[in-house]
Length: 249
Image (cartoon, rainbow, N blue to C red; front, side, top):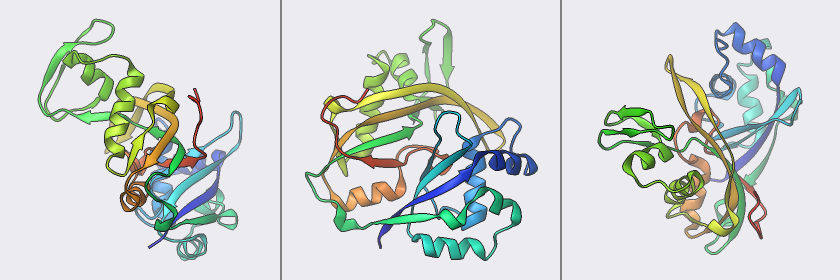
């Protein structure tokens, strides 16, 4: 079954108003709001992974996502249960898609990418030590932890970029191989998200770079499934670009 890259305009002001009416704005978590919006519009996990791209000072954004259904089918699915409030945010008349069939990929193919991820790991055992600032820290077994912080506590850290690119390379395998010479950490910040009524602070990173496909079928599955944690909330979508010739950052 072919995958489809979906392009959907989102009215940002109306998204905030809709989220406020649904009690999703205290504080506002964009990923959580979009998770609910897409689920109510198209059904659970129909348009996932996804990513909202917004230009500086723009009033509208473009949501890109992968779906097993093309635009016409998505539009029909949404129209059957669309409410006026949802229609203010989701511009179905401008919904578009392009197929991404499995035979589009082949071993040895080089592809550029733009990827937003939450590079976290689940701890197999408890960790104790000090943070980058020297503050004491104790983490329980099973905790979701910044991959760089876990490396620091284990005494294995070099640079944040190196840790994150190693983390990404492990998650691309065996579908693809990361090219470290043309890949870099384009941006990093720490952000707070809401999950199941809890506020979770963690890393929010964007990586720009190039990969080489090593297993075509596995790569198609990787696109459809996304990378890392929080894929249902705007993380983990591989936006493909032309391959880079130099480090893009």
